[in-house]
Length: 227
Image (cartoon, rainbow, N blue to C red; front, side, top):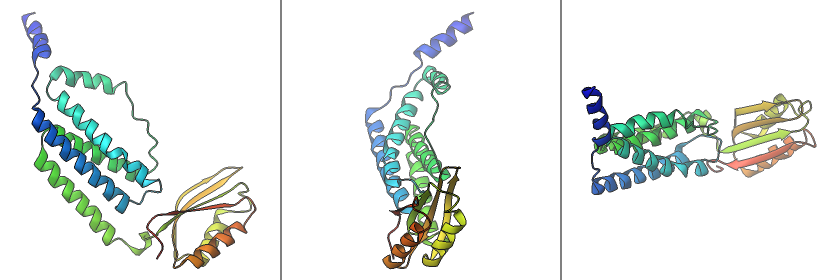
């Protein structure tokens, strides 16, 4: 019985005071790394979603993770309470591509590293990871160097088929890479990464796609800029 009481008292009283100055330094470093990661994601990422909008969450996620770890590590009772809280709160964000999840995990890792006061290891790991991303981007294959995101949708999928869309694009685009394809009885939507030599070819491809049917809509989104 005494052992149980002693353990309960340990849970209640065991707490470590967090040094404010050290916490502030870690928070500033975590914020800086999260910002640099957002810049790297916009520059080197290949996700079809709006990368700038998605990258705005990096700083908040990193800082929040660091705050939680900094507080939780100072008390065993809070650590046990966090396990119960995580069983209630579930992450339900719409992650469409694995790359987005990878960057989110990196944000959480940065927050964990600085929250655990492991500055040197976190900084070294960040530099190595971002350096590898930059090297991969620099030496990636030419097939991955598309510069525009193209979305083609049609309310008459029987006429504007995927085969017809791809055949039309190949006449004018230097490279065509299908990234996503959704089709139902009422609608067809296809997302591509494409690369054009000039604006004339882009205009020709747009006109040719619209000739596939009256219900065909074409959207071009800048990804890396036209050559």
